[in-house]
Amino acid sequence: MEITAGLVKELRELSGAGMMDCKKALSECNGNIEEAMEYLRKNGQAKAEKKASRIAAEGICRIATKSDTVAAVVEVNSETDFVAKNEEFQDFVMNVALVATETNVTNIDTFLTEAWPEDTSKTIKEVLIEKIARIGENLSIRRFEKVVAADGMVASYVHGGGKIGVIIEAKTDVINENIKEALTNLAMQVAAMSPLHVSTDEISEEYKAKEKEILLAQALLENSQLPEQKQKSQEIIEKMMIGRLAKQLKEICLLEQVYVRAEDGKQTVGQYVLATAKANGANLSIKRFVRFETGEGLEKKSEDFAAEVAKQMG
Image (cartoon, rainbow, N blue to C red; front, side, top):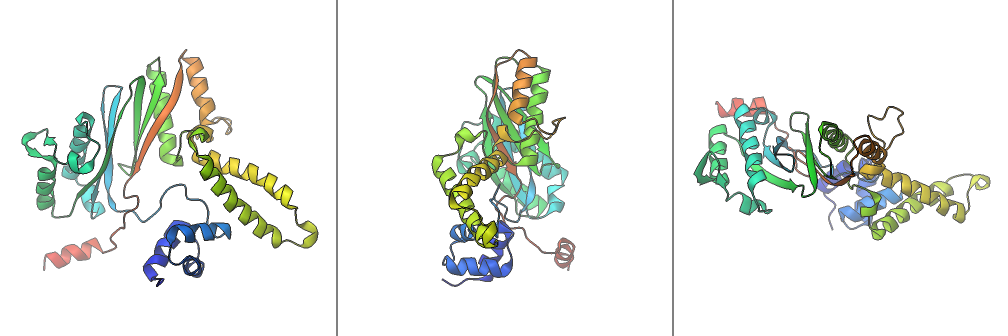
């Protein structure tokens, strides 16, 4: 398979590795991005991905809530940051989020056929097309997710004017201002630290085995590069891998992460949840979270916007 500059660029963005290292990895793996990423990690040239990190497109996320039990987050993309800051565009995105709190569908194509609340004779898609014509830029309602708490509540947080949107769903038998504040703090934690799971209980044994294999390959490579008298035995290296794997899993699991606002710098999110529950006489647990980051996995246009406008004006 031909190793194109585009493939090398994509792998560099995902791995942070050097250009030649990426090219070699792709050559060794016949152009397969996932296998090349694993190759780089085994050779200590890339770290584990916390989240897909392709260059982002423009746009915003918005969250709408309905009481304490229903919330929906949507992402709508634009071509430029100029439009993403436009008040009409932002109002449109918020209205899309409000529709999402009422819908019972999960498929984006079906969602686009839902009635627009301000004019039920039109669909969301028809209003979207009108916005594209009026704003003069391609817009896309990329995704949405609705969260309904059947036995507790939801809390949300929007960061950076819409760069990131987070919804937390919790099971709780007490709903008060303290619980709400704590869950909002956790939504901020998710925005800042990008966990992939609520707890390590959600991670499959298959994933753990694969990560251990990669970490072991890294350690053996590092060990082989030490002077012979300082090299460790295979048994010691394998024991070290248990600790390394546990540390890595803690970084991607919300409850095992260090709480960003911990006064002692050591309290985990799980401990913070337990302390909050005890202080409020509640049975409190985190069921899930949804985290949208604008433009995840999309390519960003690199044209000079001012030059583009000048060109259109002739």
